[in-house]
Length: 54
Image (cartoon, rainbow, N blue to C red; front, side, top):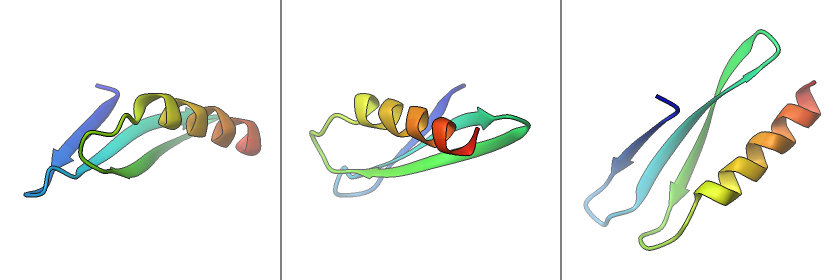
């Protein structure tokens, strides 16, 4: 499992993506409005986080 998604009544999603940086296991959490894409943006954020923490 690489992510968990929870929907609220208004179809807003809470997306939690796991990532590992070195020995640390982290979670990136994003609130995604209905009908919006998130995968590319979260992938970019994860790459940037890894760069900053490595």
